[in-house]
Amino acid sequence: MNYATAPRGELVSLIFHQQQEIAILKGVVAELQEKLQQKDPHDDTSGKSIPGFVKTKIKKIKKLKAKKKRVHGFARKRENPTDKKLKRWIRKIHTVYEEAKMYPGPDPNQKLGLKEQERIQKEYYFKQKLKSLCAPLH
Image 1 (cartoon, one colour):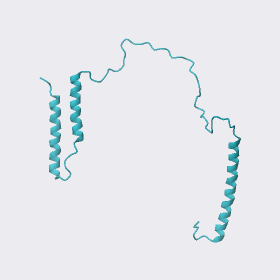
Image 2: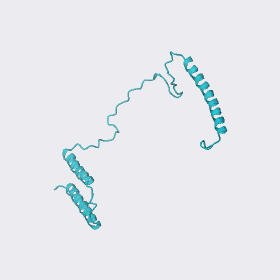
Image 3: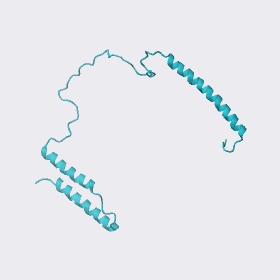
Image 4: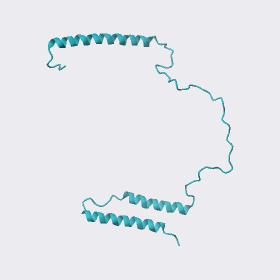
């Protein structure tokens, strides 16, 4: 219904029906407020109910037995290197990786051929750095 162009009689009847619905809803609200006031004032739940699947205050009857310690466990071996030279080598490799990651790429204003050439040169540069780090020591 378009309220701007609706006839006056329809608008008056609509207002009358809305007033009746408002009166009914006020009655429902009053009933609900009475129910809330009739609740036990000493109730600790304060309107919150606990779902049925939640177990409250259940004590464990069985105590867990201490597990027998194995002489040599089946746990995964430690993967962190303990050798100082190896740690230093890993840090150097990681530094090259971080440097390569931080490279922003060629200047966007360069010509396409020069951009590709610069990318190839940087790739070669980082490969050579890694090769020098990974070369076997004599």
